[in-house]
Length: 459
Image (tube, rainbow, N blue to C red; front, side):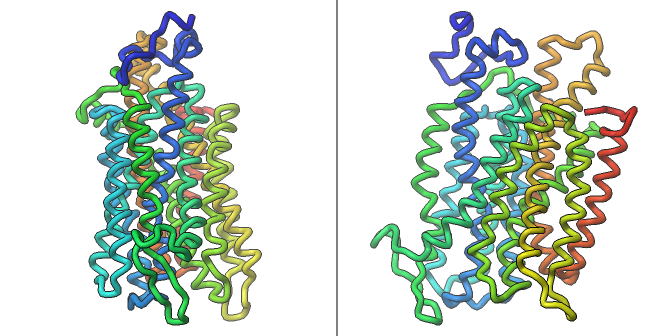
């Protein structure tokens, strides 16, 4: 069986049929596994660079940068704005350029903001506009998610996409937590010696090497760019023009899934960007950077679990109940906040927020398992004479991959809107109330279209 399918001798695979069991067990699974395990650390680096400002902004005032709270929230939010916008374009790039090529190119692009940030923070005269431009360029990391998920979806059969995409996304999402854990430590030491530049001196006389927040990723970016270029594959049958893929804009369920995924991933990445500043503003006596990384950590770790449970049960039912828990978690977070009549409870607040992060992770996994099922059912009903054929499998994979990428693009705007909402006139309570209303809308949509008895597309 292993001799029938030859995957050696080049980076371009011309025959790819993961839905055929003999093909999958005869070498296809091994190839897919290799590609996903190169994709995961590349995506982890992308998330680390994308969200690095959420940690850097906490230290900027200490080393002499005179930025107000609004400007600091802008620096946390701008990578979300550019990253989400780039995702719209990145979501269509894999079928045009090939997954191997685009993974290598998009990973290499992370060098630009990483290096520029490292040099900019060493000059106390660097104006805010330069930091804003660098923050926008960090959006390169946000864009990578759409193309990465689209690429991996081509490699796996529908029955295993939830787990595979959950691993790729969940372990990739760990980049936020890894960054929020590593950066507070690496900025305290001269890790690169004289090559890294001089330290900055805080008002209290403490030394910081804030440039390391950017420089630390450079060697890893170079390494995984090379691994992607030489170790991954392009799939010939995954080729499609933008025009071919743009059919998803006519699909009602594409737009519904954009809303549902906005509630899960948009919340995850938005809370990740805002969490350090939220802790600092709500509980000033707490060192936010000691705890903030735990939120993205649990959210990322639970994403594969959400995909796995949904593969075994029902993505729609997992998603439905997950939204209900999200509402309860937000109410608990609000309950433990300080108020005019109470000092609040950081322990209760933190535990409630951890539950909220866990639900965003589970929901991220469960919503993505729904997409291939929805579009397989849609096409089987639309073209019953082609049901079960390889021609229809290819069509479904292309459309599902485009939807995966596009929904992730729309959801990524949460990385902009959530921090900006907290920093706007809505305030903390107003933002949480707005999110509760949005989650209730998602409960209704999930139940009506996908999880109720006689739903339009049960999944």
